[in-house]
Image (cartoon, rainbow, N blue to C red; front, side):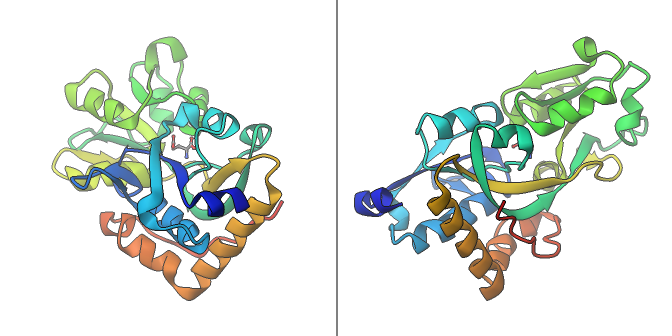
Amino acid sequence: MEKLNKAQKIKIGTKFDQPGFGQKGLSGKPEGFDVEVAKILVKELGIPEDKIEYVETPSKVREDAIVNGNVDLVAATYTINDKRKERIAFAGPYYEAGQNIMVKKDDTAITGPDSFKDGTKKVCSVTGSTPAENIKKYVKDVGTQLVLFDTYDKCRDALKGGQVDAVTTDNVILLGYIAKDEASYKLAGDNFTKEPYGIGVKKDDTAFRTFINDTLEKAIQDGRWKKAWDDTAGKFGAKLGDAPTINRY
Ligand code: GLU
């Protein structure tokens, strides 16, 4: 943390293709709730916002990016779980999403994860994500039914082109895509998992993790957290829900 403050710059791993959370806009910089939460942390560290370097971290590379020091922290729709905690540490959670399914607007055949059990429908997700793992227990044949890419926009394109029948990931990511093209897509059914989002940091950097947890708690209390949401993903029909309780494990 001292090093970051002395250097007066910071590398943040986030998504570049997820509307509402981290998406590169016309400004050339990613925009979204994850980016706004990261900016709150950076400000509290005393580093100017224009000294943030954003590094694209698709789902699969997040742990490696932290372990190898390619980024100082990851804010990227990053579900806190025990497997990931073996390699890195999480501050937070700062939001709780849930896995859902996106289909074409006129689809009536897919109504939830059980719709994949008959083995006929293809579903797309992203390598190294929790939804890609979770959906395996619902599909009859992983080899033919589960299509994996490195980013969600490729899944959206595959749905658009008819190569797959559905995309599965967190509801809020899907709601971002739906908001961009409401005439074409919809959610199929309810959330079927809990995905608490954390800020990923180096496993042994307890001081940094504590600092992030303290800052998140303050930001939740003083309204910065809600404003970050209202300015970004909140515009896309997703719900902020209750303020999550920070888990200082
Ligand atoms: N939250 C889930 C995960 O961390 C899905 C979203 C993503 O791939 O970033 O794997």
